Image (cartoon, rainbow, N blue to C red; front, side):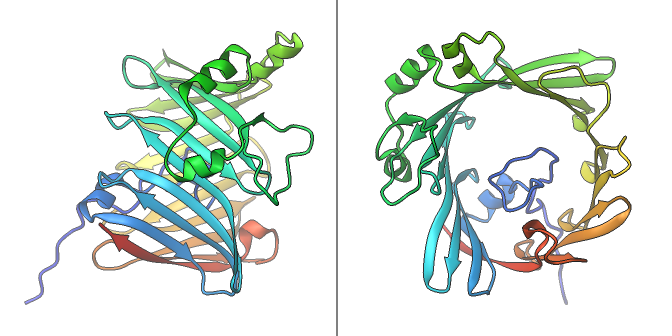
Length: 324
């Protein structure tokens, strides 16, 4: 007799919020419950091609993501492109995030602050120049010179707190400021990006951009982008949920060239298909496959015109795992 057990937790938590550390422009954060319950230590996503990019994700025993690495390879030659490491507080909230850009030798450290409800209150972003040997530097804008900071981060450490205090006092940072309020029946989360370093030049206008997310019943409903922090009465993204699952994301819905992402799930609530539709025409899709235990086995991209731009190049990423 064959017994089947429904999967308790899905592999991904599909959300509309962007995070450029993931392998595609749409965020598919790993579900910490799934990662923890299966004691996953590392996930490697890569193609079988001789030239390409592979992605490595490492996790803590409690299921939180510890680091993410993207590596370019050409046959036997490999070169790390980006490395991101996460640092957590005792209660599990992100404390800092450090991202190394090996192309320019630049390191960005994001420091998180929270309000009394454990909501993000602000994120200070410090840009450091690690002065890596044999690396191009970022033209005339170098960032704070901290030689060897990349090696420090790879070991899981960070510069001492005195550095962040000094850079804050001298306005050597940028920041995201958060504000929460209720408007009609919606809960609003307002994110405003400031270029605090402009103060050094006597510029009182440090506001760079603003994003306002509206949520309804705990799920994102709409996003307004305020370019240059201006007012915006027209939504830039609309989100449609059903039974807790994101079904559709519409970009610039008021535009004649609106982009739409559609999502399909299996009976275990695992994402199996994401479709990109431009002006009513499907231009690309991601197909995700899982084994009978709910583990992701592969991600395949299919497109109508594979070489349209790099984002749409067809490829298949296969997943391999290491466990605690």
